[in-house]
Length: 186
Image (cartoon, rainbow, N blue to C red; front, side, top):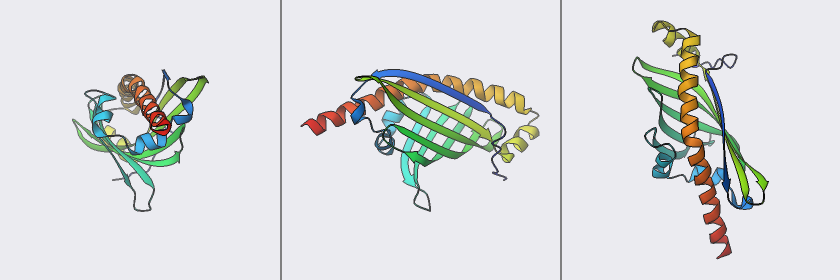
């Protein structure tokens, strides 16, 4: 298996926003991700999200493990935290994908950002970008699919998935911030 990532090619790119109300100073996306229970993760994309967990890689880098359906593929994401802070996280995964035609891999970059608009009015931005691996390119060629066809299918399914999960993520992060504010005030 050749897992070399082809960053010169883009399978999909989705940027979806949602507005919520929460105390900005208590938003902590990094901690929310590291403590996100599986059932809350499932509520963030009903039917698509299957399981979530937190671990570290061999070198100690924090990782978020997510299992979800994107279109017809079961995706097992092993996100390594590249940037982890209260208001912005950037994570990169070399993801295993199980499709009706078998296993392959892709790279997925997930960015989560919360911005303060005014007072407690906030905007959450969920950005997901996917690049093929050499393995993926060989896989689609073996299955008589062009890159353009694969990219169009992935863009459609990933876009729909991000539209589903973004408002739920925003509300979950906001609820987490409100709960933190209550605990701190007590």
